[in-house]
Image (cartoon, rainbow, N blue to C red; front, side, top):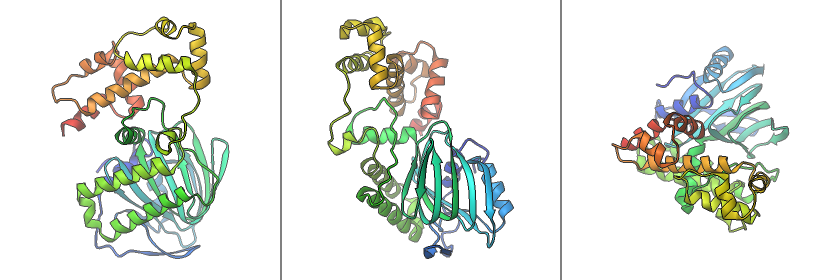
Length: 360
């Protein structure tokens, strides 16, 4: 079993890979604010305890939270259940008590959750979200913390890596995205798309919880994983929603469009700002200003993103004898060590690890 002492939320991601501990486990019924509720994913248990100190030790080992406080521990009971689909995990957690904590977002994971019971107030990026029952809340990967105070919360949540959702976009529309995909939280209470996604997650949980043996069938789990990724991309608003709903793309300048097209066609070549000036017909300062205004990053950052994305695609389909130096040079990186550093920061794993997965 993988060690719990790792960067969040990688700990929980690895915990979920153990599969169901006891497929014959009786489904526990919890007394919640919404009445009695069957414990989600009880056929795939990892941690159950009535001891507050044992739960605090578990939380600290996972390194998911800082300043985790149990406000009230009367009739204490806590659990964490999880099932791994490969690139996405479906999880449930419940705390039959009041609590408060800070959650660390300095990770490579998306964290999408909704309460099935209880109440919670979440503060993230100076915005306050009141999470009521059956209300989705999305946490994008990135630097920073969120604060949460909750009363008797029971939640179902999804974890997946940045690279997984970007691969899902490419699989569905055949387009490589170079700007990181970010979901947007909305305050709409009765969004039809949110309701569809919530119902799909609940239905998936019920199917696997009632028939845990199908979790051992890769053909079945892969189909559910693909369905969940599609539902996430179609149902939740994000900065690439226009690729899925037919709406017009965000407005951009002709200069930026020409520069991006030239960069994408020449990612394996040494490029200078002067080359972009010759293509667009404007000065280098104007090009940089347009990129900052319309994209929020520089031309050189866009070039690096294109090269890293191209390298990621190559490594996922590479023959067993392909060397990392060859990939580095073909994608415009003169230094293999710098390539490996940027790749690890971008995708959360080393190039050699991506290549090893392809060889399995």
